[in-house]
Length: 78
Image (tube, rainbow, N blue to C red; front, side, top):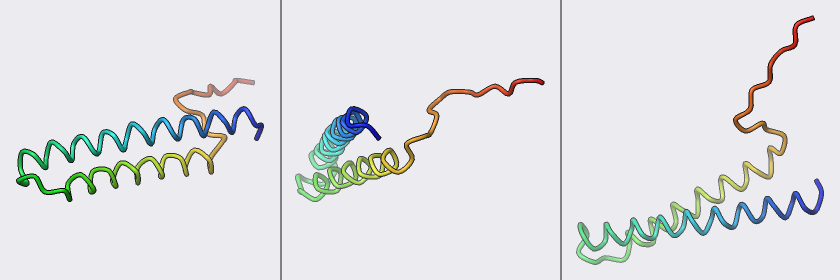
């Protein structure tokens, strides 16, 4: 794997982590304010779920580098 490809994967992973942790925190904040009388555990739970999903996506991206995402390969006729 080249350095530029590795750098792109890390950039994708970090951007994905920021988005997922932020979304989990935001949903935890909404649930904390509306349903759980301002407890802090929904914030930690939402952020942890976002971190776990981001970690799983990054792990999959680094361990399976040769997947074709959304592309169909047509079989050639002889």
